[in-house]
Amino acid sequence: QSALTQPASVSGSPGQSITISCTGTYSDIGVYNFVSWYQQHPGKAPKLIISEVSYRPSGVSTRFSGSKSADTASLTISGLRAEDEADYYCSSYTTSNTVVFGGGTKLTVL
Amino acid sequence: QVQLVESGGGVVQPGGSLRLSCSASGFIFSSYGIHWVRQAPGRGLEWVAVIWSDGYNRHYADSVKGRFTISRDNSRSTVYLQMNSLRAEDTALYYCTRGTSGTYSSDYWGLGTLVTVSS
Image: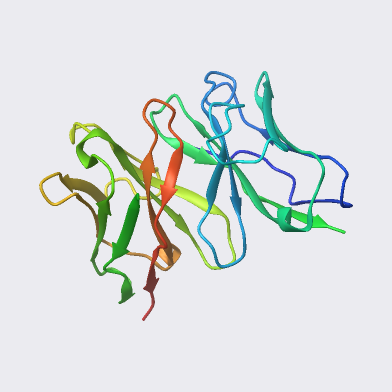
């Protein structure tokens, strides 16, 4: 159950787009379309922003989008805003009937 | 509205035990799986365990298998996490989350309960 691989940090200016990658294996992301993304602001509980690779729950901004290719999933945030500054985590269901998270990516809005 | 409230955290010595509770409201509890996810201070999220709506299917992270047991009482809308043989590395904020049906994601999270394992 190795953690999914995410970049430790990414940054962008307001209005720009950024993409965070999440690399797994053929025991998780490569097998299932059960990739989720969470946003966590400091001192707060995580919030689900993407499920099933690209599905946005009700109330989540359309500026957030998800995709997947082979064993790598991606989260794109367009039109960056100051309030997007947070930690982002990916997760995936695995062939062991468990869930695995990525190490997290800190997004800085310059 | 959907609410998940964790309780039972505290300070425990290495090798000790603790039972966490997750009390749910605002949805049909018996229809949903419940996960436990933990976050060590200053660290990332780590999935711990899940119990599905039937109460029989339960799965654990390798790091806690054999030491932690998840269970549920649908009559009380509560999920429990019995933690035995606790180690320093189990120190974390423990969240319970509602599992979305068939997608293995967590759509609602509690605020967490802090477990500190220290002598």
